Amino acid sequence: MYRLYTKPSCPHCIHAKNLLRSTDREYVEIVVGVDCTVEELKDLVPGVKTVPQIFDEDVYVGGFTELKEYLK
Image (cartoon, rainbow, N blue to C red; front, side, top):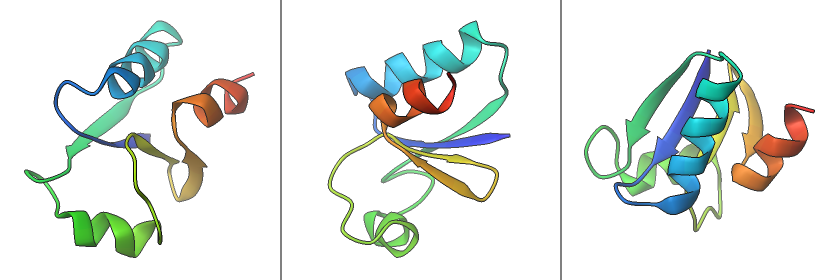
């Protein structure tokens, strides 16, 4: 199961969710500022400045661009 750390109205977050749905992959969305804090996300991905941040189980994938490459 994929974990997506997102923010509302983030275009890259929307693209990532659409890509996972279109390839029938299950994911859970974690909204930064609602479901977790920025600090919690930075503990998982030190130095992070953007969303989405995507994990495949415990494997860190990266953002939307990295997700596209990862799924190839």
